[in-house]
Image 1 (cartoon, one colour):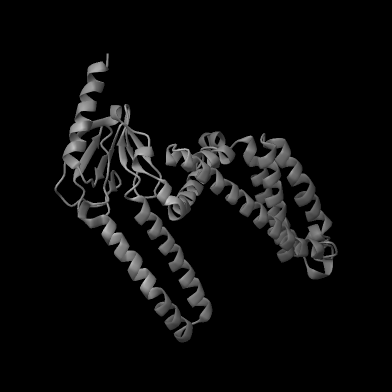
Image 2: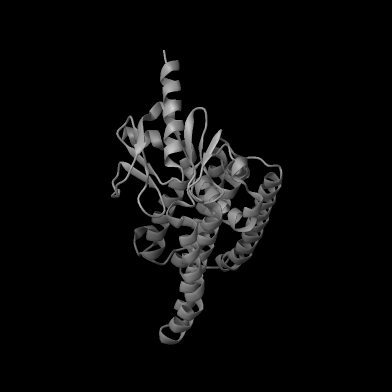
Length: 335
């Protein structure tokens, strides 16, 4: 209970209140009991007070960032509109019908705002690419400026990175990334060629599969599956363009692992116990992290906490020498 209390903060109160009133008013409107005079008294204004007055006020009182508070108040109130459209009896709706119609306008405004925001972020990233700054920083800075370093920002950074490499990969070079020495991995076991093969296979089978599903099963299913396939095609193209441009780098304090379009990981030298060549196939395990596309990884990093990191590099021997030298330097400088 104490751990749960520590994780919950004042900013979580609006969400908790939303869940509580959703449960209570759903029970109130969907049942017949003494609270609603056994089904004869179910006015819409009861939910309106909690959803459109108390809940937004609670957002502004509990959330310090007023922009975030306004967004959450708008989203939560929209959810209340959706809830009310389901639970309030049709004969009790007077103003609620207008709220239900207004949600489409609200959705359109939200989409416009989102498109403007995405366009602004893309233009900011493109401008930073032209300034020859670290491409990862160019992508993460505009996102984290608005969202901070959160799980949501990491997911958005990943998505933005996909589109950035899809659209602007020709503006990105390996030497723009932070790090004194860079190591590639796109030539190992013909990684880049194999990715191109996947792209061609997906592009070739997409129209054929769409037609087959359309006529044999369902047009809707064909559209859904084709849409998902197109997203996977976008992912593979971005991955194909990123693998030769996003290197694994050595900084003065860490090994900076960049792997395709995935979020990077910094492994501090202080946490590394040994580094050595690997010639074996590595099975999946909770304490093992693999950064390797095809074949078996050729470098093993053993961390002091017992975890293992496996890398597949084009120059494994050179990488191992650099890391060992840096580990020796770090050990000699420790008191």
